[in-house]
Length: 212
Figure 1 (cartoon, rainbow, N blue to C red):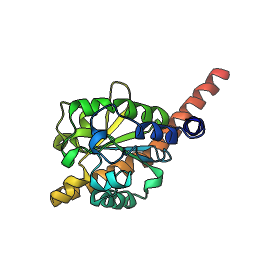
Figure 2: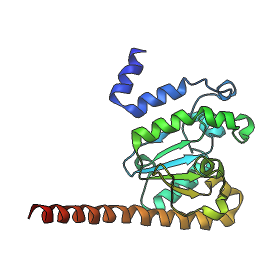
Figure 3: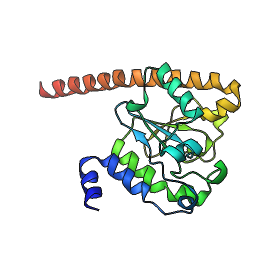
Figure 4: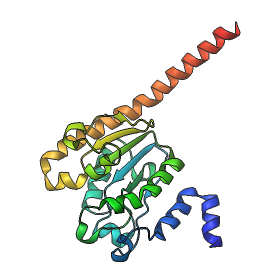
């Protein structure tokens, strides 16, 4: 217990991961080998939200380490990012039996962990991978209609829906859409500092005017 408190004080992400590993809020922990809290950092400001751990993730305790994870790594490399600079997690943190879709009560039980991660990391953009992740923010939308389009929630969160890499492995025609959406993400990330600099310059000019 003292070790957990020390971890929380010195590394909020590490402390939160310890809490998630101990979570028994839904029945998924009974059939899963272990929880998959998520990994990475807030360095780039990009937060990837997938659907649920699969077999490989359940075994290793890490998100996106199977074939879909390899594709995600390739897509990240294509825009000059690697896993250490982004944060990756899932809507539910334990593997559903036989990789079935997460149930509403299971998704709801993990809401607290998503909120805690967002509070700690405060990302520039949340990239939702797959429809279950998108439904967390836009439950009435169709992913085929809104993927690749930046949207804001009423709370001010910037959401960027994409197809899940696993879907592109099942349907190769979707790979082109994923590549294009990652290119759009790269443009957003490169433009964001420029927009911030312009805003800061505008604020500085206004302060100068007021001081004259």
